[in-house]
Length: 135
Image 1 (cartoon, rainbow, N blue to C red):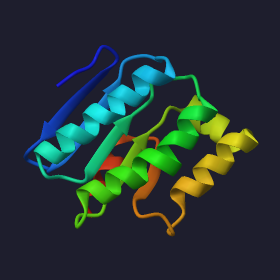
Image 2: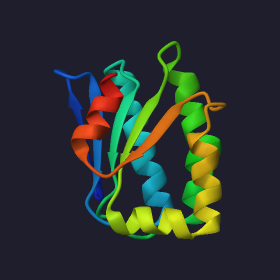
Image 3: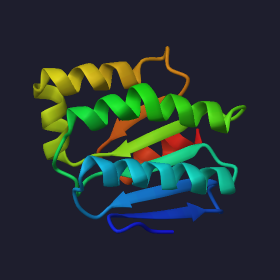
Image 4: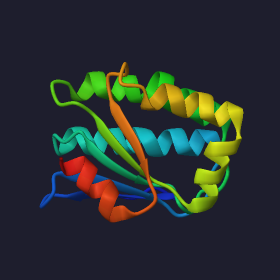
């Protein structure tokens, strides 16, 4: 399955949904991509996601707020009793922004907290991201 900005592939051998963004997009399109990702996840009864955002260099505070506070909790509830696990594959430039931007740090800290109904981690390489998902 694909949208105009994102490819969404189910890996039956691993039980993982892989979403790769090919470019940046407006907030409304990114929200549609995430909704398509959840539909695909429900169809294949898996709650393990690898999100490849290396080609998206724009960091929207609105998207950060929506994903961590609204979408991920909603997805976690819909996929229960499985626990939603999200590996986010990031570019070095994105990681640098996360480290230096206080607003992004706030969303990241919130999203990575063990208090969430989902588990999310950031990775710089796909092997480590997949290994964490499958642990």
